[in-house]
Image (cartoon, rainbow, N blue to C red):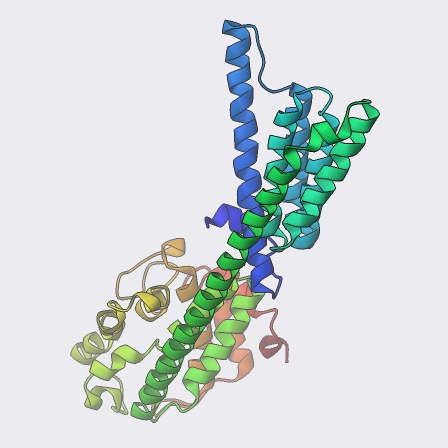
Length: 374
């Protein structure tokens, strides 16, 4: 599913099945809207060439209003109610045109909400919509003083067969989706346990900064939530934070444990640890978004960082967030070569470097957190 469509759905619903149905509903509504516009284009050409029309403009406009308001409701309100609204309103509008189009054409239109109901509402919902369509059509037929039994003898089994088929397909699809989701979650959990294991190994190798990875991960996630990152982006940020120093495993121990300042050659070796991290993790597709944190967390907003000298928004956002969290924790911790800074001193430094070393938006976000206010 593309990002523009994802932005339109009820992304905060904790029920994964409802989020999936909301995504599907939006996709269908966008496709149907495009189909209406396309038919209008055909109508326009048909009117010019053959003086005939396929779609009454009132009906087409009604459909576009339904689809547009359905998209808005799906974005603003509960996805289930958006589905109910679209399906029921479609049935009503189709029923109103029974007197304007041949009856068999009207029942072909009914197939759309009947089949759609199983996939965007619930598998059994197609029977509810089919019954609603038959009741609504019967009312319009009686009002037109037509023969009810003769009019419904063929459409009724067709609608019920469509509802049955949609129910069977939707049930099977939901079962497959649930199985796939469970397996994906199990695989993700296994990867995350491996990442956590690697993180503990990194901290054991660097005895100077116990707890650093845990603290900096928690702070980076707090900043990310303040900046409105999605759940997936927060998960990638967490993995990147846990692995941000994995490249130091290739840096010689005498450099990591040196108590004084590093000379030029030693500093050059130290600055290669982001590249080592990339070389270690780049063959793992699952970690590709997280690698950006390990590779670019020493880049600076003004382009003075390393290893690539990226500038501004060319630095991946997750790396820009992590950089601020990493510097906060590093400055507040005691090291062999200096004592940790007071919180007021750290605040002053971060504010002074906003727009130079750090992304100003990330600095603004951290000022809203409890760790800054306390």
